Length: 124
Ligand SMILES: [Zn+2]
Image (cartoon, rainbow, N blue to C red):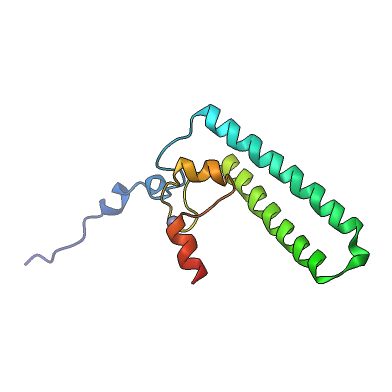
């Protein structure tokens, strides 16, 4: 009489580091990466200047100034996160589904974090 047992070695054959998929499916060239990083840094500076200007006029406290501030903060947040992803090595893949973002999309919007399909499903 023999009862089937699960082989003890089974679990050890799955390397955990292969399942944590943080790298994009394609790699940016160093020149492309530097170019996108420079644009992100430039945008961050622009948004910081914009927020400083809006805060200087904060006594105006009207709805337009408030929505401008909110939009500038959101944009600054996106840009800062994109720079963080670049440092972590996850830049270039969709934050939601993990698929590689097309380079044309990154060139248009370097701070974008999701592919078109995921952005669309988040908006509905
Ligand atoms: Zn996606």
